[in-house]
Length: 608
Image (cartoon, rainbow, N blue to C red; front, side, top):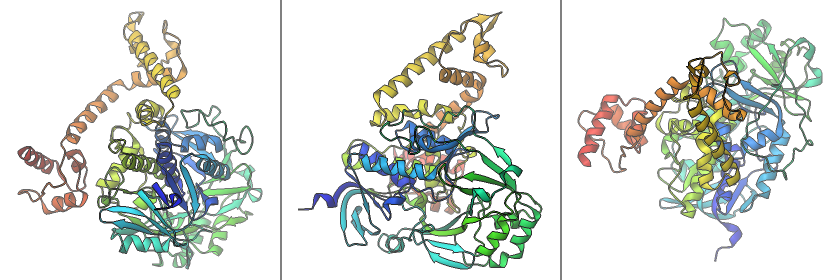
């Protein structure tokens, strides 16, 4: 008989942002869950910038919250600066962003996990995944403990076979101060036979705030009316660790100089990136500073944002000057920046290289095609960013628990439903050649997928799953009724011969300017103003989404043969590699043309 402490419904490997969401949601849905992490005190560690949200990423955090995840609540409890980005632009690209106190964020999430019923935390390094036929059966740790599970979620972040680079000096490590997962990486290659690639990311130096001349820098204060991320009320039993409120702090802006560029150019031969020591591919959207100098030689000034790491630390994060150059070069680079001439570096910058699994091996549920109860979430799938990881972790945890408890089919979010759906569909259907990062431009229906309506889009599903309280869902339903009824009034009532709805469509007219409009809550007002002003665009995107749903309804059986006359070899190989579940997914595979989708449609119709 198996000891009960060695057998679980779901095991989650990794205590980063993906692992936290996966473990919490699996336990909340009723699965007996074990979270294994190499260091209990580093659960939810903000390894890079202690910030949550930003362009498209803020939308993801709102979606996580609407589905019942923890990231939004945890961010609101630890925010030291909240800002809405692109506030002056259209609603499709507005994005919330919070600078967090990284210690409060980490400790509150750890506390939430430790208090969660059905969730057990254990500090140990996983060295092997055990499988039997087409199923994962559990994990083995460095201590020789073998834990059994009905489903496993791998959320290993940047730790697989990871290497840190400080100039030409390299060492194993998942991040500064933490060991790498060498044995597990080897197990995924040899025991499971997964297709593995190599990626790179990096982090900038940190400096002490008292050594910065902030008076000479441009100051950036928080929004005067911060709204936060969560649509829900925080758990009062998990208070702010800093007291009733966390102090709100400014950020500062400086610029790199010609001297900074000269320092980098003079030392490129000492860069592991340009010296051939790094094989992994870095992201184009967040390049190292030396990469900026090489790629944009005519640009002298680059923005560097000085962001506080917390209310109870004096360390500042230098956003925009990530580097892997040697430590003596880092001193020269930092002190070439205006306002940092006397700055003291408290932590050096470095690059990190790590293994990832090519995500075409996944289903849209985030389960591996070969092992249907082995799920991957986060940077192991080739993504970058806390938010992308947390969104994947939430879906992987939901689907792992639903599978083992037999509570329904996997939850798959469509591209017209959520940025999380856009991200997962991109990962599964497109070739990943660099760390994947979300942008609003990746979403065809971004006017439908706004940060302000994430609760309207996804909270009903969160409630159906049992993750959103009935009272919260009732309040949403009441607001929906108010919006519908008010819209009916505006579309039928006139003032000076013009329908109130038509007046509201004018950019210069706000809801408060309408004569005779009923008094309603601000959230409902916001939704009506957006719907009125962007009505034509919204209707167009809804029509496009309906066309997508028609393609999605054409299911492709797993046994379908792509050996079809007229199908190019490139298209056939990519279709056989991805194995799309429907024509919609097939249409988004790079290299598959609309004509070939039509050909597949003909053959599917013949089979039917």
